[in-house]
Length: 243
Image 1 (cartoon, helix red, strand yellow):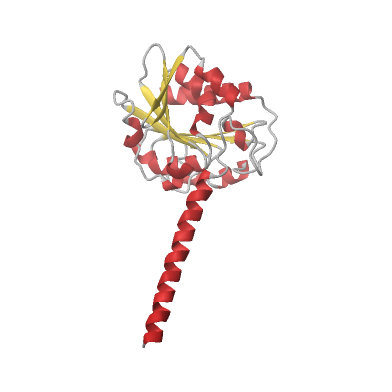
Image 2 (image 1 turned 90 degrees about the horizontal axis):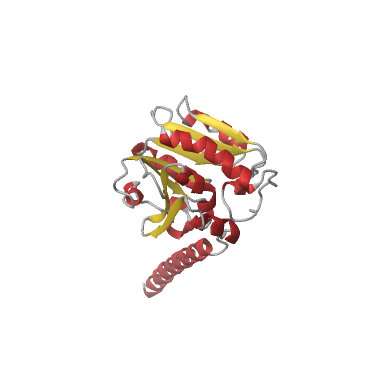
């Protein structure tokens, strides 16, 4: 009997140890290898006289300096990407009249972040019309929050949630040089989006072209410049959010 109790205690403590090691290992992994925002594009964005940048509790808020904002966009970063890496590519969207709130996902991974859309829109409570979007894994999470938004924006991403029967406006941007969320993968998930969703392939864009954090392992080599990429994204995105 005593041997059985000792064995049972040994098994229970072994399970506890395995769980602790798994939790600690996961937490450590989420903090190691986070891709940081490139210094120069971020500095240029912070110097942009057309926008204000606020480091708010809800996220990084980019707002037009003049004219106010009637619409907002909650934007969710890709896995283990510094949220500040999206300031440069979204600055012109803000300058043209849409306030952008870039979230800080829990543990740097969007699928760990269970907060609702209102946790981020509360940063700018005067705005009533909101879209949601994200890059890569952030886009997958954005699809889950799309029921509370009017528009959905996907950067090198695709849904795992069936939104085909929803009435929201959807813009999906892919890169021809993306070797992670390839155009083929995005096309294969097209049936999960509304019929009138707009899919655009950006010639020469890689997975990392949708942010400013340097090259990413497993990705292709971009042939589009950062300035060209920003212009193409702004041209596609701004009219959708402001309509």
